[in-house]
Length: 458
Image (cartoon, rainbow, N blue to C red; front, top):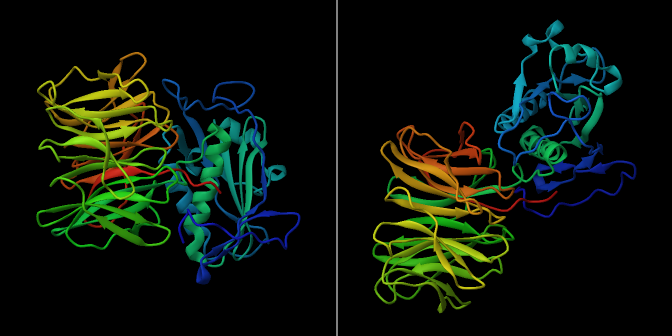
């Protein structure tokens, strides 16, 4: 089952909404226990908790994930309890503003008398400087209630109830709950419900895979042998475009993940580099029908429709904002590779990078305000973020090895990139503020050319 599939709704429960999961038929029915969103406070404020993910920095929120409980006293926890607890903890470790508090740091080892708000001694948790409490209550062997409470007020931030068909569904439940929690606290929950496409190399073969932003639910998207690389998502998440090379032949590939269909198309010229979708669904790609790679829009038959960036030099790596009004790209028209920005309405093109002599792999944030790119420094390639309005730049990755090929999350906050810091290229995630990078599990083989897909709504 993928996060993007249409989910069936169980209408037999009139008083509770949500999802039920049946692994044998890949159906999922999620039962919302309750969702209460409210203005929330910073860790130091006296009223409500507030998390501004776009500010220059965030106050760390002290989060305590209490041990799971079984509603029926005297019974041991069901089989999925430990797995679900571990999945939630691992998911939230990707969020830099959560400081996870251990039970050993709290009075009486953080033990609670119950998992519902009326059973919690919030005063004891406040003494331990806990801002946010997560509780897990198992009401049946495969029925669970998950809650998050603001400790200062004791109010419920979000609560959900789930019924699992089997223990293999704990990862999906954790993803859904963590997404709801992020939505409640920041107004944006798409990090946990989005996927990243990338090229995985094993031996001499590269294939396109995709994985959740925290490394779960890995899926192979192509099985073509040869080299399949440089994936990019359509805005609706229904297509992934990529480059396929088999011997000396370059072709443009399109895969539909929900259908498993893969198409390969010949294109003009003998090179095919860095394809990308425009927000309207049109394809763009760097081709060399005139000898030097330039950026073209292609039509439904994969013939050239119009040039988007053309010069005597090399123009590659187009990236677009979600409105489809701006395109950033790499060009060597001034000698060394630098990042340029084109206004697609006026046709005006301006240079973005001036520092360094080798700037590549631009990624325009969905809101069109920031450009992330890779710059060669004395210490190796590093990821930088450029603010288009102010012109300010800041380095957000620090190696070791090379950090390359940044891609933005749908919420304009997280950045995924490939890095050789362990000796083999793998995928990592940081934020626009340069928080400590965390590795995304992608399985065996190297992982390169990441592309972040759209968030999938519940």
